[in-house]
Image 1 (cartoon, rainbow, N blue to C red):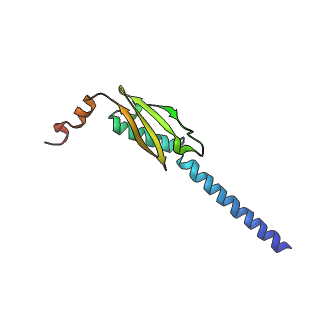
Image 2: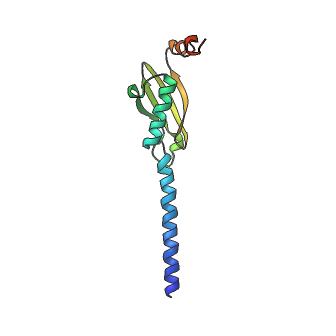
Length: 116
């Protein structure tokens, strides 16, 4: 009888550990986490050629922070530009659309940056 109780307790402990690991994994990389949002800001800063400190993130659509986070879309504005990003997975965001002045591309393709 005592052996059965020990086995049952072991099964409960293993089950609780598995549940904890499963929920922690989702929480670690969901679109509403600090890590994921920092990844979004870093990507937008690069895409927009704009300092992170000047960016603002706004919710566009989807259910960010829930189990349906794959439908999450965030907007980023800064330096007179704006872009929207869709959450892909594991803290990764994909540029969905953008609106920035044509000079943005002229500066990015400047020959002085290429060492020519």
